[in-house]
Length: 286
Ligand code: PLP
Image 1 (tube, rainbow, N blue to C red):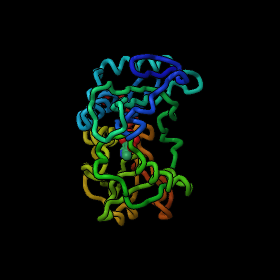
Image 2 (cartoon, rainbow, N blue to C red):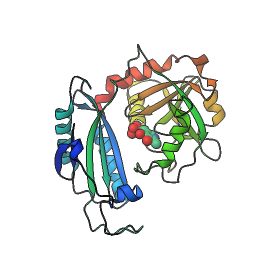
Image 3 (cartoon, protein in one colour):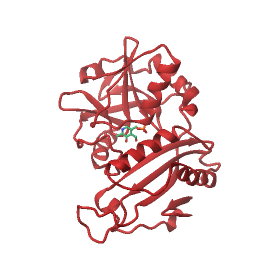
Image 4 (cartoon, protein in one colour):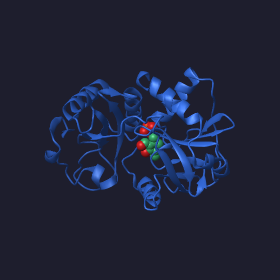
């Protein structure tokens, strides 16, 4: 498996990073996951746009343009596609602030950021004929106040995810102090109620998911569904007709249980196949 680290392509085993890297010491960096199927990306431009906003926010000057990054990703995909992964690859791009002489909270930005890109096998796009049903846990969102930054400091997300995973759940949906849904530990949340598709509106308590963004766009352009970005309370979530998770690798995932409460009697509802179908139809155009 070929990876890219700081200007060079190399076998994964040869990629080495200093323990003084601030990505290692502080989780001081951002990342993206862009899916690619047979060499075709989903949402490359918006994923990279979000990464550059994140880099600006934390004052890292990467020194690579979007098109330079795309060339690197293209080469990794070409080299790493094989029969085993069927050309279904997630491209992971991580930028950390890099190595500084001492471990100290303040940064000088005198060194070069560390750029690491690798690919990993992902499932093929979900099929509406053989859907996966997600069972999710729920808990209070105990992360920080800047969840809009896609930082590699993921301990909060890891702890929330693990809390569900250790109990046999696929994800964990999170609520703020007022019991409104923020997001899930690695996905955004949608519900359907009486034919209306709803998702929490964006703020600093959730990541502006690219799949969320693309799905809203596709629904508004190519369907008659009523779509709302609005608060969703815990009781609305549990009483929803359908619940979905979105993320780059899941696309739209239908949820049939939230912590013991069955959604639509534990069956994937009728709106999901239409919406995943629309997503599949238009996802390469976004
Ligand atoms: N929210 C969190 C916390 C995430 O980590 C992710 C993706 O991994 C998402 C939402 C979904 O974002 P995207 O659709 O860009 O993958």
